[in-house]
Image (cartoon, rainbow, N blue to C red; front, side):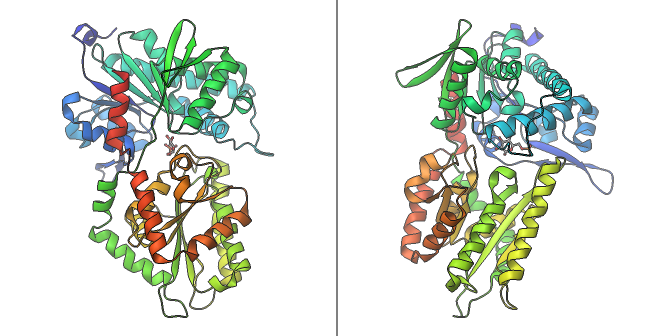
Length: 491
Ligand code: G6P
């Protein structure tokens, strides 16, 4: 037990996640520069203020992070990070690789997003057994660090599929703590989840049930989790006063649902800075005007280049639109921003290449000297994403499966003239936004093309009123409220 554990109960909040709120890169001149990350957790936690004495425990991800961790003994104070105090774990590369790429990204992510398909099948061989052991080691490193950093009675918020074993490991070390776990991904149905080796499936569930409360982005994912607890562990699932809980091994874990919303105030302010206006000028040049002399309509998508985002099928749907409805040729441009992600994995590299190839094919099949049908950008640029949000007439969000998808919530909040939303029914955001969106089956290219067509046909007042309603729903649970709700429930 840590020396701090003898002090009185505390309002201290600790967050644990694989990727932390800050990352370090070595600049040309040799200095280490810190870059603060975005995202709901970062803004939520900044808003609850320094009085909570928050500490964020994360892994060192690149060489810059490792250096910063070594130089500071892994403890980066508020001054150093420009935000929360961070405990950065310098986990041995072999352990990190196996836990992060091997187990978390290649197996747990694929399972929850139901991405396995021939020839992309799971291989639960000796190499996976070794990776799973490293995943246990990596989770134990987080539990050890949290046990050291936490004051008596502190609240710990553990994030995501990388850290499923932490709640139980931490409870064993520090029973005085209040422990929450949050899944930012979908959860797999029991029949799919049970494809995991028995000890892995049970280990993940038992680990998460070590929390006082484990929460999800939607009711759908929460129910699938409890279904897995029943089927894999034989746990008891009950609903009392509207609260779902799971009882296993003599302990009860409450299940929460907290749909993260867009940070409207931040987005609106950020989207009106000069760098965004500059990007809009550039994009307007790329979009151009149609034969009628009017600015062309825009169909906008912004994603990490991620298999679950279904970008290639989205491009096929756009191509189908131009085939089935030739009246849109020269009158619409697809701004498709697909930012490379997890390039250490071969399937992601292949997918990234395919996105580029299909965009090129569409441009050679339909393009004319004055019209580029698809403007594909692959260099991550937040200001340019916001510029596209502001210019969007129609937003395309068609994931195969997605925990929430904040882009679906952000574009209507930011779009200048109001946008229509084409939304996959498999995105978590569907639970809240379906009534005001054009909803599609993400595997149905023709339906997606038809939905884009219908969305483009909306007149300006109809689009604006759709967009207003979407924005209102989208900002109902801004990050601060989302986080405070979780803390209140844990208290
Ligand atoms: C997405 C998911 C998160 C996850 C993150 C990890 O944003 O919604 O649940 O934590 O990816 O991404 P990374 O780039 O760190 O692998």
